[in-house]
Image (cartoon, rainbow, N blue to C red; front, side, top):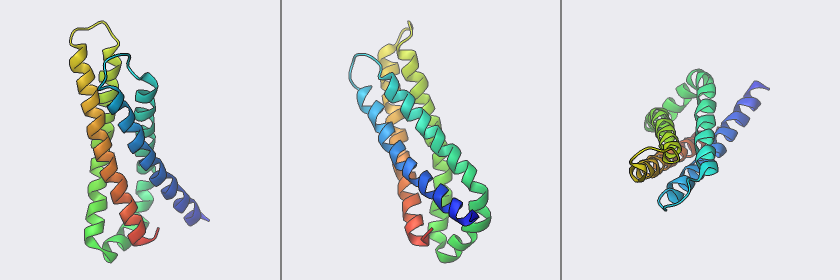
Length: 147
């Protein structure tokens, strides 16, 4: 029964990861245009990214003890790619929060709003690219290892 919940957790984590990629692209595109800050898009992107990374952290202990040894035995290259994905996920989370804070500051009475808008857009763009790499790595490893 526990294995079933692990598989469900992995599947939900993977699907939400791809959804986070799309959610990160949305504010990256909207912030490139002048006008109002897309607050709901920013909130959704930061919130969903945080949820996905937290889900990955929750799955990590089981991954480390039950999945990782078999993955490295099957393909050391895939195992190391998956290990790099974890570090990249932390960077993605940091970039999403950087974009969120910068976008929030765009609406505040401070100087440099245009550069804050650009900073937010760039942070969300980089986060989306990184999240795409993470999601691709997770999907490839899931297919390879047949989780």
